[in-house]
Image (tube, rainbow, N blue to C red; front, top):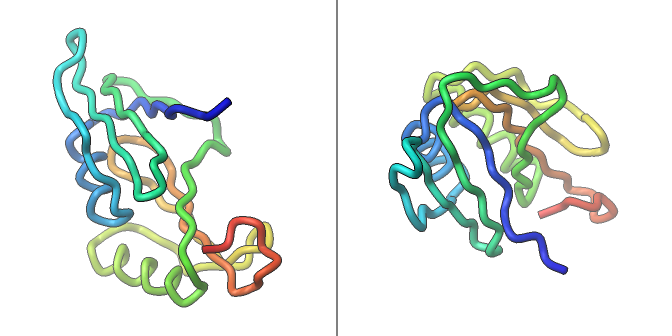
Length: 126
């Protein structure tokens, strides 16, 4: 069995889509109004699919997040600086769960983790 896609409910599909394209390289396959709600289907270079559906109220459990693995700890640092320079509120990366990582609130109302490790034993390395 193969996982087909994940769906995120977001408060603004266009802003969330632009954020994911700009910083994480996702590609938009389709964007339209679906049953009265804005919708976008996105994919990454590994073929993973992410759909975005717009609702006014967005609420996720406290630990919910979407993680984007970087190829190195240096790249995590670069992403942190880029996002900070572009006006996002980010704390400096820290060693969390075996990876060098940081979290941020993404446009649309969900949390993103940016993580990476130079340790080849790290299971989610780049």
